Image 1 (tube, one colour):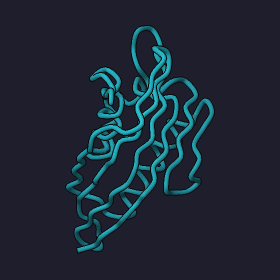
Image 2 (cartoon, rainbow, N blue to C red; image 1 turned 180 degrees about the horizontal axis):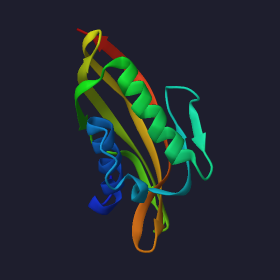
Image 3 (tube, rainbow, N blue to C red; image 1 turned 90 degrees about the vertical axis):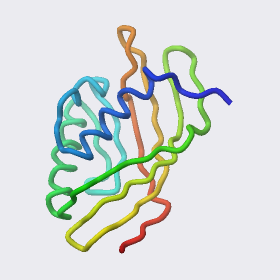
Image 4 (cartoon, rainbow, N blue to C red; image 1 turned 135 degrees about the vertical axis):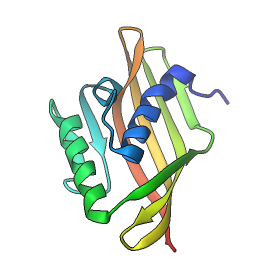
Length: 137
């Protein structure tokens, strides 16, 4: 099965790096102008012209509230990849590990991406996060 090209994975890595460090460097360029983001924290659906900005603030607030530190991420091989050259779709099996105010944790899930090619660059048009397991301790 074909895999997403490295330039398709680049905006995903930018978003993961923000989530890991809370450093927004490059984050604005990772998304199209009006992305749609589905997350596991309120208000759950972030869309429209300010969707990425509201998601950014929501994630920062969630990370602070949970006391998240030491986040690391690991990806499995992309699943269900397809692309027509203008759009690309794939699912990344993802494992996050780190610490919260409750102690160490491991969260696994599927991170679903729809990318759009704009100006010769891939950007995230939409993503959804689905937790498949969570282990504390």
